Length: 87
Image (cartoon, helix red, strand yellow):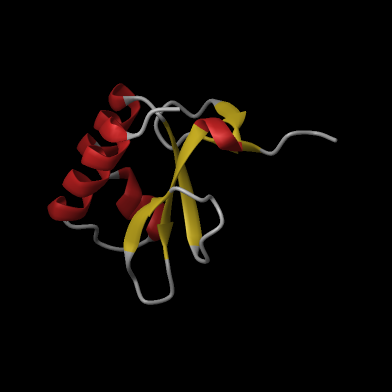
C-alpha cells in the first residue's frame, strides 16, 4: 500500500503525511496544529522545519490556504508548537 503523500505549503516538496506538521481550520474557524493528523477540518501541511515555517509566516501562506485572515498571534502560536515538536 502506498504511503499518503502531502505537499509542504512552503517548499512545495511532497513527503509522507507523518513527516509533516498538519495545521487545521475547523468549522468554527479555529486554526491549530493537529498533532493526531485526524482532526476534522481543512488541513494544510508544513515540513517540521523552522525555515519552512518562517516562509509560511513571512508570505502569509496560511491566509491563502484557508482563504481567510490569520492573525499574527496564531502564526506565533503555531511557530512555537512547531519549534517544540520533535519526531
